[in-house]
Image (cartoon, rainbow, N blue to C red; front, side, top):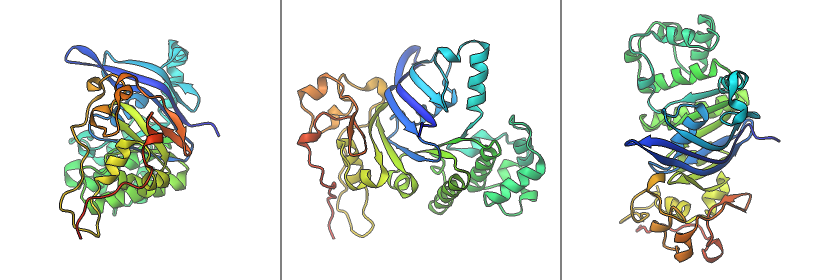
Length: 330
């Protein structure tokens, strides 16, 4: 099966303090039709910038190299140039929907919810269709909600409104950029369940961006782990959680609190997370990795096929694949 979304060797730079700085480096990633891919990483890892690259929401002065394709359409290459190319790119991107982290920040406080859903540029959905979609995403009394303003609704309801607005366009792919970050735990669970349910019903592919590896593992088919703008590991979710291969993935999993034990001190990955433009030559994770040797600091490892996925580490043969342990006291 051909991938719906295909990023091949993608590198992105944007202007920061007046100078171009890398934010994504040599990213190769695919999403199959109907698949749920979790993209996990710390702040500055490039996970949100990946979604913005696909959507074409990069700031002025950006540069993109490599191949970014959606359903075969090149979103940045030579075939995207000229009037015909730009038209094809616009059509392709209309089949991609994005759910942002803070729904309230992306809604006009002066506009009623119904006007937002029916006037947004996607062929002007009818009010009847919008009401039906609000009902489908679990908003009670949707006709009344259509007349309300954003300040009259909770954060969880507004996130459901954003999901409804995306679904009205019948996208082939939804990019959900940390859609649960500002929500309480109960509402988080409801939003995640809703996204997963709608994905399965519609056969829509989903890229779920989060800093919470456990959350991604609950419903994603595969998980991609990013660090300093670079993909470190991507594998099936159950395998990645059970037998992580990359030292960074292992560190993230070891730092999770265990619900059934009391920890004196959780293990941490030493140092601080780096952005892509701070990454040293060689492996981006080398400065924080207990397994790094001189060769790790001199050249960037290539992505290698390992256990039905990809891993960027030259020292896998020397690192135990046993599940990461937690330092805990009972």
